[in-house]
Length: 245
Image: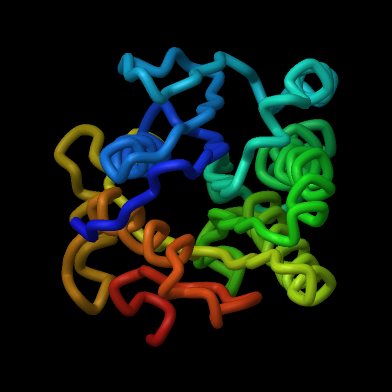
């Protein structure tokens, strides 16, 4: 695990209850940060520097209300880790519905936008702040998800790049991570039964395995560190070589 000192840093993290988000939560707490953590599931750890909130990002009004009520907390945020996301079932366009697409977009894109717009003014006022958005290989190529998921992750990458361009001169760092096959509860269906799907995914990945969520958390820690201050508007792919095929 990468070791960094994040004392006196406040992190706002979405999707903190499991998977990549939970690894990020543990990693930043271990590095000394204060973490404001959001998830629709209960976050199952207690820590003196953790402020945990059970919040469904699929509910636009609920999120908007929370952001308004907790403006004083948002003033303190140094780093936003927009990690929450939901998968589709690899459906092509005609196998899904417009309401289903809208709900997925709310979680994967619009919630990230809502949070960005709430926190960004405070960062601009301080001339300092960092965002890391959790994209996906589906935000770079087709085939990493269905129509809705692929669209959502491409949109998230576009939001990230424009923020990075518009606010680089005001001390705001903005980047994204594009994971491939990460062994998280979100991908549990691939390991169901005899695990044939998970084995096939590993076989299709050049390095021959799934990644551990901690590998993504360690990359995140680097991107938000002082060592990464010249990195701006980039998508960091962590996919074992899947997209180079």
